[in-house]
Length: 253
Image (cartoon, rainbow, N blue to C red; front, side, top):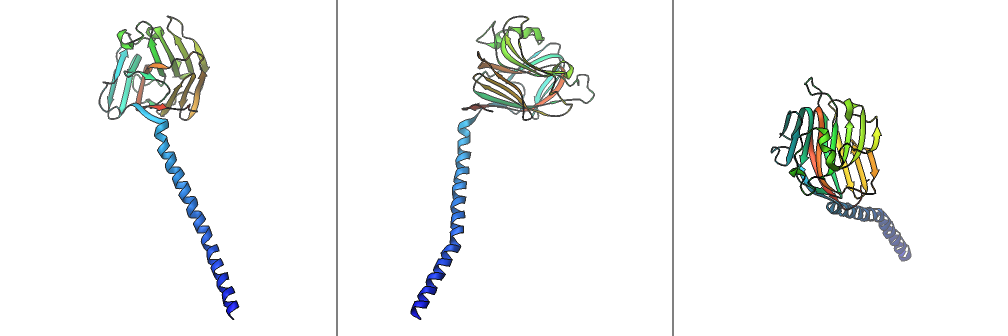
């Protein structure tokens, strides 16, 4: 009888331990998973640090506006609104140096306005004017496109030429010379649809994304790595928001 009781007790204890084992394993796995998640969250700031931003609620103090034939450029209530009959360049006054990722959202307005053409979501970045290389704003520019031939800069023209072309150029600072790097007939702008743009400047890597699609992917053997960023357009109407520039310690895909 004693032997039987001892055997039964051993079997019961073994069953209890077996029942507890999966729960203990799951608990340990959950602890490791949570620790991993916390580690990933904690690591994020080391790879993505905010360098600059504008919420467009406090006017244009951080921007320099160059207009060819007037128009309206305002920053209020979270929107940079650009409504112009001809060329317009809106420079971010703070110079930028890579590696960085620049993001913004721009919507071409089509609501019957005189400038609601839906064309030319364009950018300059890493721009330097060869006439005043230490100070971009020491040289006057009128807003006409030819005035920018003196820049060394990357230039994207998304939905340009009446929304028929999408191109990447690399200006070399010479009048009349605008070397064409990439030339597409799509993607193009869609009226009243937001364009969530991301520009990557990371050494020789030059990338321009729109709505998660890699539009321009260029490796420059002699890269422009610092300078100024600008929104550029002509005869159009845009609403721009969510301007952010991030420092990255690794190359972005």
